Length: 73
Image 1 (cartoon, rainbow, N blue to C red):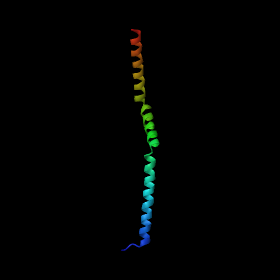
Image 2: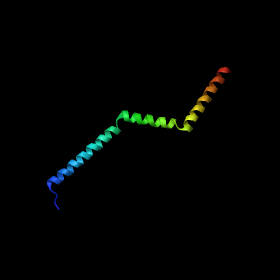
Image 3: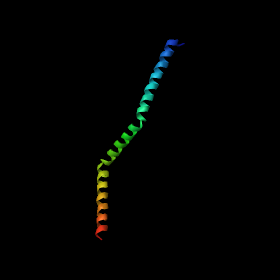
Image 4: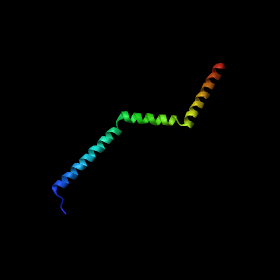
């Protein structure tokens, strides 16, 4: 079965449109501002986990206690 020229042209145009959409999506995802914002969101999410949050608070309290003890001695 031979395809007619019009059908081939439509398939090519459809492929071009899909490629253009893919390139647009990639340019949005690879935008440095978007990458930085995604990184910030991941860091915030990590620090908001109770284990991390309270662990850092504990480490800060311990460091402050060591500094106070060093000053007092």
